[in-house]
Length: 311
Image 1 (cartoon, helix red, strand yellow):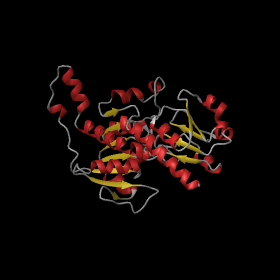
Image 2 (cartoon, helix red, strand yellow):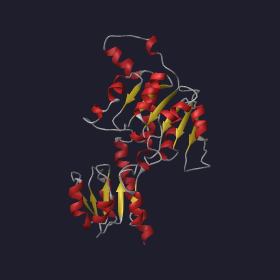
Image 3 (cartoon, one colour):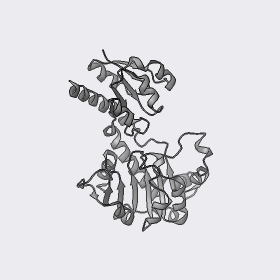
């Protein structure tokens, strides 16, 4: 019987479905990298979220490893090239949290454009300021999406009832125009976007994809959304854009540095915190009660497909 080591918090439906396929699951969500290294040689499968980097040392210790399941979309904590070299299959589950991400991005954007957070705080503090909290409608705006995979497509689909024009750029895809978005060049994204939303994985190419240089090329003021990975967007560049008036506001679910106390020590954190034009959430866009289960279901289904392909 093939064994799977689960080293992160996971919805029990994965274990149920994997055991039905004949796997034996060892659920150890408290395991550290050291704990995992000590026992991984005895397992054919590893299930991880983002607890630690699955690096060369771990792959070398995992002599029987055949597959890794990543509970989520991004694979930036796994050495994909080395996994391929070792013929280890990689399974992720962007289908599991794409709806969550799409909805979260819409929620943040509407909240920002209508000053919901500020207005709520003011009313609670005895202030009734109508004119100061007059909002902007989304209708009639051009929304630019960078990255048209599961997350970008979900966001575009969710926008379809708002009367906006959606344009999308994806470096690795062509011919993907559909009823929700029109494929364009990056130049057009920069020239036309009233709203800019990132839906790309973190790679060498996307590291600080949004920086002062890219900001410089934008033609008109815009709202920025990042629900992908923190290091795709340089926070200081966002703050510079807000200061200059080029960025009207930013919705950031992810940051270059996540978790305290390290986040509080960043030079840009104080300015970010004080800005009334930024909405922050703690990397939870894809983290709903529904996606928690769906991610597990998707991974288990892909595991079944992997076995079918191998037989």
